[in-house]
Amino acid sequence: MDFAPDADQLLLARRSHELGLALNAPDEHDDSGDPWFSRRKWRRCAEFGLLGLSVGERWGGLGLDSVSACTAIESFARGHADLGFVFSACAHTFACGMPIAEHGTEALRDEVLPKLVSGEWIAANAITESEAGSDVYAMRSAAVRDGDHYVLNGTKNYVTNAPLADVFVVYASTDPSSGYLGISAFVIPRHTPGVTVGAPLPKTGLISSPLAPVYFDDVVVPAENRLGGEGEGRAIFTGSMDWERTCLFAAYVGAMDRQLAATVAYTSERRQFRRPLARHQAVAHRLADMKLRLESARLLLYRACWSRDRGTATPLDVSLAKLAVSEAAKLNALDAVHLHGAMGVMAGSGVEQAIADAVPAAVFSGTSEIHRDIIAAQLRS
Image (cartoon, rainbow, N blue to C red):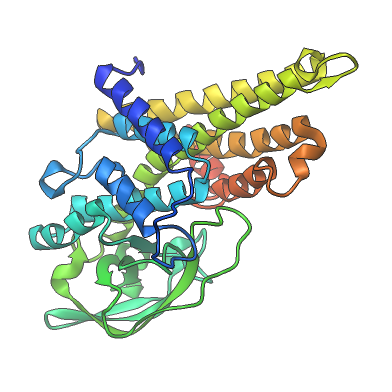
């Protein structure tokens, strides 16, 4: 089991990091009016290939394996300070692009994927409902077959990218009597009659990744816009979450690496009691703990990606990686604030924002409690 990057991966990592750094500068030429982030910034990521890392070359993607995609995302997030933007781009690619690439009809893939990879369209994954959060398959949204189409009704909440989205991957029940075996997935363009995006939801973390509810009122969806077979929504969603819980969470590894470097630099420069803070044992131990969490999480994440690429990954592999990264992100953010002292709680320092950005990592893509349940179940099996 060797995770050492090859020459191509090293080059990809370097260029991804350079792109992340370049996009930190304000975009003086953007006139899009987007309140969250620049469409021009989005297109620059598309030109690089970041929006199609794991999508096949046929549709304009790079067709990379999980380890290579993970490497690119980690390096990009190490360079780019806006984790909200990185999160939105990853949600677009892994929670939306990959289900379409893996389960869409040929016509649907040919129509949608080039637009997603090029950044012409932004995608949003719509599955969560107010009464169906962690119990995701308790959804009430329903799609009723009527000849060659479905009629879909329901409300989805906390939909990442919804205010900006051009297309949605939507999960709805097509057979309520079958529970999770009756869930199906659909691709629905925003302009479809009956689709309404609600007002953006205020948030404190991942601020530049917008959220909103989406309402579906007698939306007519052609049967060819269904992903996979009827009732295969659970398997499709699980597959997309495996992509998200590995490659998307590489963004947190990159952010933690950047955070640790900044904290080491600050504590090495800041002096108290006539010596640098980093020379005090209590501070040095916190730095060591931050490094330990980071490297442990990184190893579990790359092991999960390595196993995925070989077709041997288990729910245990993925849940261990996701849990390790999200919990490390929270604890490292708290330590960074503590070690920066008063500076760590000053608005605009960037240190305090890391806590708000880290907390959601333990909630989305399955809460930490859900993943502990998965891990425990795998141990018993």
